[in-house]
Length: 350
Ligand SMILES: *Cc1c(COP(=O)(O)O)cnc(C)c1O
Image 1 (cartoon, rainbow, N blue to C red):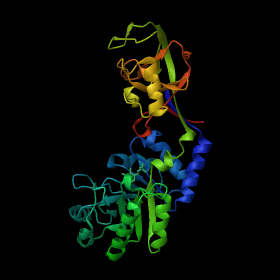
Image 2: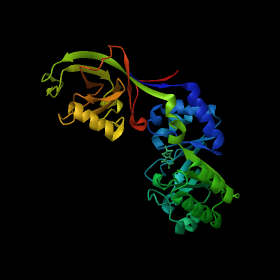
Image 3: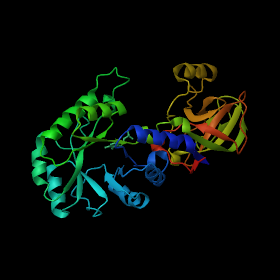
């Protein structure tokens, strides 16, 4: 089993803390649900009292409408090649003048958020297009204006120039100067203090941060990922194993552990435990990387261990040198994962 264990009390205390310290929070619930699954996050958003959640795509809307009782904003902008989901709880994002005109014609009365194009250069209107967008709105109901800022612009403990805050301030000015009939500004990737600074200087606006990672994955200490040892075999140096019949570099134990490519386990471990120094030591000791092995995300005896070969669909083969006590079949080992690209067999709230 390749499982996510959640210390539910600790995790929920973190979610409550973020909810209380980030006024107007809009929980973002998209993709693989940050590893938890989107339905579970919808349940938690309900528990924290959210009135609105944001999903990534139109394909995620129906499930969110079932699992969450409030409004559902779609982050991917609406395009004419999409159907308009005519549900009064759905809030669309529009970011091109022609899309505004088209959705206004097809679905008058639909609720929309108008997006501005930031330095992200992903989606949204140029500020010079705002007037044209306003003219195209027809009977659409404008729920707010939205900006999505780069991760690189966030201030790091006050030392970096506050690029995101400056850009948000500038858009806040553009919104107030525009004819858009809304005072709600949705922001993505402003820190809590940046959002507070923005709200303080623009008391006419309601600033609503859209937050995913810092909410769901903001207290990693509440989460642990564990993989079950499914099999183990003593191997001798030079013995060939696996699909690729690779020769083992030393005497040791071959562990077959739960978790493979179908779970999102890749050949690149997310973090080399201990950093460069430990990697150097490991190399000096075993020369396993020189032997063509890659560092796995599986930690045994306090260290990330080497893949014996690239991960299989549902399991991985990990080489353990003979001097390390090997876990038993049925034992669990820790795994370092990137939560947004991992699919777990089970998510357990302990
Ligand atoms: C994904 C996304 C977010 C949330 O991003 P996190 O880094 O997970 O907080 C916010 N806004 C938009 C537009 C997004 O696409």
